[in-house]
Image 1 (cartoon, helix red, strand yellow):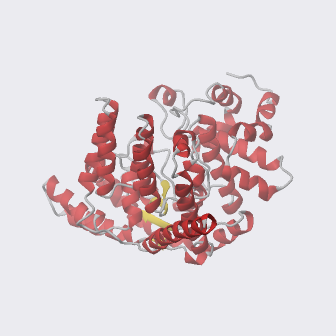
Image 2 (spheres, rainbow, N blue to C red):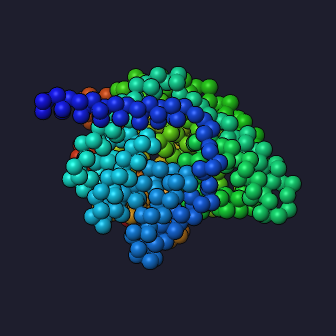
Image 3 (tube, rainbow, N blue to C red):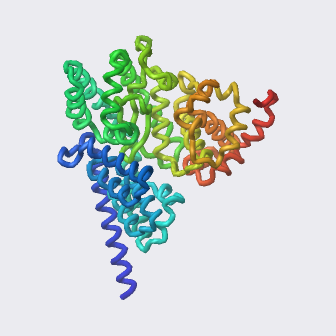
Length: 451
């Protein structure tokens, strides 16, 4: 009887997991799935901001957790909000609450067991329902992988671009800020794709006002990228070639949707549970005026030729174990994405400033990098550098260069190239990858003086 009970119990959990995954799989293929009764951008942003405030200023973790949950109820990107709520629940030793939220995250399609295995989630493994959670997450992955192994199933979703320009033109006819804001919400954000929703919450942390104020203050710039937008989208004709190359070098590669949106210069690209998300406002041409653009964004803008590199870089992130918090781990995540992208599309065109500066100052940069390997603060290495560093000529995203060189060395020193790529995606031990790359030995042989 005990054996029969175990079999029935297993089949029950398998069925529940399958139903959850099938529901997610169906939702995944929708490119416009907003329910106005459920989604409210302002309430979602406000609750997330309150959660951060209660956590950082008022030191009230319970209220922070409550607001993270409320943010998801109004549509906030679930992986981000639930992850924060889970970590804070675990910090309070509220295991049952954390496990309930983890199941909620799984219900929303979370599928990377490597991330849930991360140290900051480790207490979940002591809960009696850990195996059930793990089964649900792994079931999500199996269903997703099966449905997304054929690159022909991947949708290149560009509908948000036209929605933006429609809203942009309508807003130009209004005088009052409140009227402009209402147009962007109703004609762009609420009508947009799930990719736009994710991009908005993941990368526009300042909320709708951050977007509207930036766009309306930089109309000269946005007018100048309109034609560049069209050129960029027309230049995606080689996507199928790139996908075929990925299939040849990455075992069991999957191909989620790729969403192109227009943001407010907070990011060129990122990923969510729903696919790759690319901010096309970063693409310029020779006619784009840059006078009004903030200085820190001048290093980010690029011509249409650079778009495939960004797109494939973000796609590579969907295969990676991105749970590493140390500078070394995060550096290998970003740098290996650059390296594998180069194997697929060739060198980026143009060459990013962080590579140009890195090649010219390699030994000095690595000396400073090696002193900060275990830091979880990535300032001056990933994303923006501080003003002091900028005055020294230090560009943003130098970790991409260091990580690229480490990944390239690791790959070149590996006999089994396909296995090496998989190890650069799984990233189980960043220090081991650094050692096997022999990059430090290479740096020591550079004969120009350090400093």
